[in-house]
Amino acid sequence: MTVSLALGYQKHPFLKELGIQEMNPGACAGPDDWSDIKARDILNVITPIDSSVIAKIALASEQDYEHVINTAQESFQTWRMIPAPKRGQIVREIADEIRKMKEPLGKLVTLEMGKIIPEGTGEVQEAIDIADFAVGLSRQLYGLTMQSERPSHRMYEQWHPLGVIGIVTAFNFPMAVWSWNSMIAAVCGDTMVWKPSSKTPLCAIALQHTVNRVMKANGLTGIFSLVVGKGSVVGERLINDKRISLISATGSTAMGMRVAEAAAKRLARTILELGGNNAIIVAEDANLDLAVRAILFAAVGTAGQRCTTTRRIIAQKKIIEELTTRLVKAYAQVRIGDPLDPNSVMGPLVDQDAVDTMMKALEALPGQGAKITAGGRKIDRPGCYVTPAIVRVPGNTQLVCEETFAPILYIMPYETIDDAIRLHNEVPQGLSSAIFTESLKKAEKFLSAIGSDCGIANVNIGTSGAEIGGAFGGEKETGGGREAGSDAWKQYMRRQTTTINWSDQLPLAQGIKFGEQ
Image (cartoon, rainbow, N blue to C red):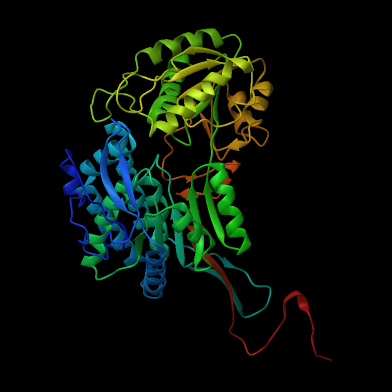
């Protein structure tokens, strides 16, 4: 179910293939319960490729929100009783349907968000991968069996579906992050209500169309729901709604704090994937060929708009000059342009506000002892294009400790590995981290309890490009909670400890005697 309607498309025929096509006011769209546009605010969808309007979206009202939540609640009563392996089979069908639409879905990510084509299709592949992972998981929602201290008693734990899950996603991964949550939660027996970023609503609508076809074929509705609306109308209601058992939110730290506060007031669960200020330590014994390639992808990929983007390089003094020279040369070879062009390596920032934020940060840097070594300018052409910046800084200045969601790479020196780890950890964020070294001792120290304080720590690979098999998430102002692989599924279920007495006696735990002489 969704309550939003795409109104128009221009020169991109793949939008029609995805079910996003020109419609008359009041028309219905899709096999499920799409709303019309009557008495609703309209959102212009702008592509960062050339800053043109590519579609218009009818935003959800409070009445629409209530309809979606009530349906999700009703559907949960049925969905939770379907055996998990059968829920997994439906998720398998969703994965197959997404496979069929991989190319147009990937192009839509590029059109609406600005990622280059390989990254756009890679994001769709990530959605497919996590669905495949969830299919296997549907037969592995294991609980432990414990030894009871009481004779003739059996004690074990089991896991039950949690309820209605609220999913709030950001613009930079408009499909993958939804899939991390929804595919796992679906096999766990939950129903989902999705509020996407208002910067990328078409991606959400297209994916909803894809899922709707599978659910209709199985005679199901209300398992996967979509609400495109203003934060003040939909977002606030979602995070404060007692009917929502868990809020999984991706976005800024400020947004996450608002979600955490609202959820805490009603003792609801949260999974928060917030800011990242990720660093790579480059030791004097590092393979610089490897390090430069990894840094380039991690810092420039997605135009620096990943939560796992490398933003700080902490380089040993002996090699900092050579490393900087190599990076400047590598940056000069980055082809910036239309992300739909297969020759482009970096596309635009998501909108003009992102460009302005980047330029404002760069203007403030000289006052903090920094020097721009390369890039950092707006490209004079339609759209939101910039050149990625390399900046030499003395250390973690005030601005360096803040996350500017743009392709700005700070390089700072260190002397000892202990100095490097201190610099690495003294920022408030704690998502992803890496070290490049050939030293086992340095690597192990970085991975130890006195090393990286991040949720993700890598050796001789960059900070971005996490695989779905591992749990994804961070610490400190990154928010907490985990998504995707490992045992992240447990957050979408409730644990129940069960004890069965199969004797005719009633022994008490801890050897307590009660009412006995």
